[in-house]
Length: 219
Ligand SMILES: C[S@@+](CC[C@H](N)C(=O)[O-])C[C@H]1O[C@@H](n2cnc3c(N)ncnc32)[C@H](O)[C@@H]1O
Image 1 (spheres, rainbow, N blue to C red):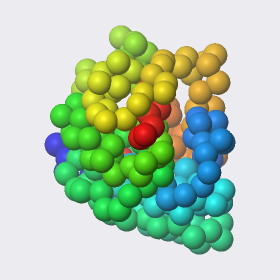
Image 2 (cartoon, rainbow, N blue to C red; image 1 turned 120 degrees about the vertical axis):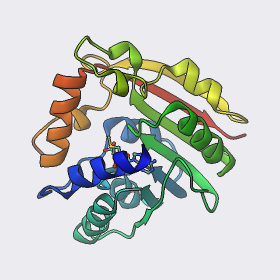
Image 3 (tube, helix red, strand yellow; image 1 turned 180 degrees about the vertical axis):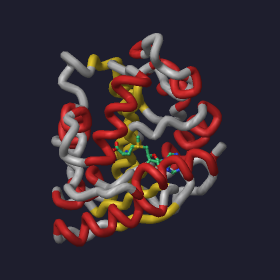
Image 4 (cartoon, protein in one colour; image 1 turned 90 degrees about the horizontal axis):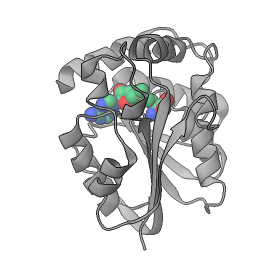
């Protein structure tokens, strides 16, 4: 399963990427009051969020299991003139090394067992006062066009919050992507070919319209 997914993402990210991806609007919103420290973005894709965090003064690292994503992330950081680290890692199986003030995961969509393991590992790897930010497609946004396999990986805030141990849940909510002002930049196609392809897939085949957002803090 993991290998299939990795092949899928390598294929997606190997297509031409000729513009740089925008950071997710929710990332900007939810980190605006945080003091920059060490940040880890799990399933970072081509690195838009990591590079933006680095540009805001975070010591930012992105991990992804797609070599093509990591390659794009590194060249985006170089192009933007920021220091950011991109590492190849499998979020479902690998340990997180180090301690972070911010750990984010945007649209990673792991199978539920892997997700629970990853959330436990991320919670352990937060420094005191650190923030965990989970963002993904919400199962309530599924439509008849959404494939069963994809919807099985979508979430609701209650289940994600229940999988987060040892942190204080500050926010666990569903955002409407059309009206909730959620990940606007993510949904604007055109700035990145691959991402636009992925959006088309999400919007027209998978048909998602809603987002699970969970924000938790380690005391
Ligand atoms: C929908 S993309 C989201 C990328 C980025 N977070 C964003 O919001 O633009 C999902 C990313 O998760 C990565 N991914 C999926 N499963 C993974 C795993 N087990 N370990 C590491 N990365 C994974 C994929 O390679 C892909 O880059």
